[in-house]
Amino acid sequence: MKTYIGYLIFMCSLLLCSCQQTTSNPRFYDEGVSQELATLRKQEIKELKYKLYFSIPEQKSVPVNGEITIEFNLDAPQEIILDFSEKPEKIKSVSVNGQTARYEFHNEHIILPEKNIVEGKNNITIKFIAGNQSLNRNDEFLYTLLVPDRARTLFPCFEQPNLKATFSLRLDIPTEWKAVSNTYITKEETKGNCKTVTFAPTEPLSTYLFSFVTGKLEHQEYIEGNRKISAYYRETDSKKVAQLDTIFKQVTASLNWLEEYTNVPYPFAKYDFIILPGFQYGGMEHTGATLYNDTQMFLSENPTPD
Image 1 (cartoon, rainbow, N blue to C red):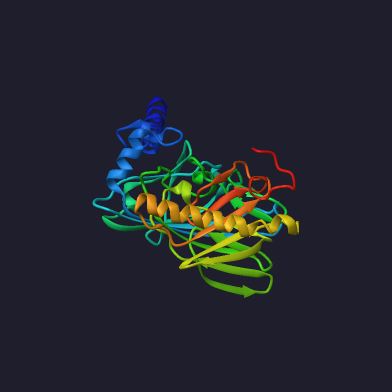
Image 2 (image 1 turned 30 degrees about the vertical axis):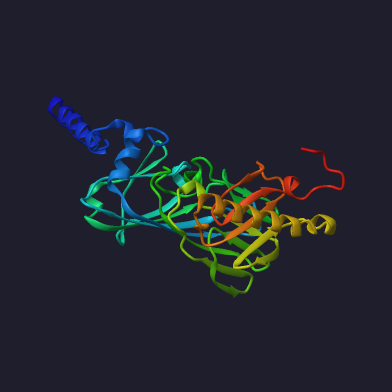
């Protein structure tokens, strides 16, 4: 009996050891992203790409399903630690290089063992339920706000600003909704009550600069010389909407001034802006899709000096 109990203790010890993380630096598994983890990932991960898909239901009470494929190159196989600041049950499946993969979830991290990773190009595909913290959902529209480190509350990623990546986005949205993101729309397809919108890949961006807005939005365009700017908004007061002419001219003048001052041409695919009711700040400068608070842009008849 003593021999049997000793054997059980020995086997349990082996099992516990096998469940422990293999890295020599325990700070890699801290909540958030430690300096040690950020430094390692910056050194090792190359040619990073995110391919994102979200299915946006019209009812804000219905969860948003998502899928992300993360592509990157490595010089040698190693354990991969992704950031996802959501409950583990929101992860529906994980595959690595085309094969279903086992993983650990610890302190807001999805941990993939070295045995699943190869030298050279790797693909990680994760199906998940998107977090709502930074997916600002309203009855007829929603917008992302991922500053400063909240992309990981929405989708799994490497959440550190010095690890830039290209983002490709595809959305399924209600037919009557419009969508805008960091780059131009390359394709729209409508089937029944659903519209699929595909966007061109972005320039290399930090995760906090990725953004999209979708909903029942009005749209206007402005062209001056070779520059075309689009505005998306929900304002219905015709006197306030008429102010867009002034706003367009001010935006264009600002971009022209900055190009002349810095001697750097505007480096992104487009400049659109979205004026949102209830936006938390005066504005947020996502590349190609700047968000503004409506009360800061559409003025009443007798605005204060502020």
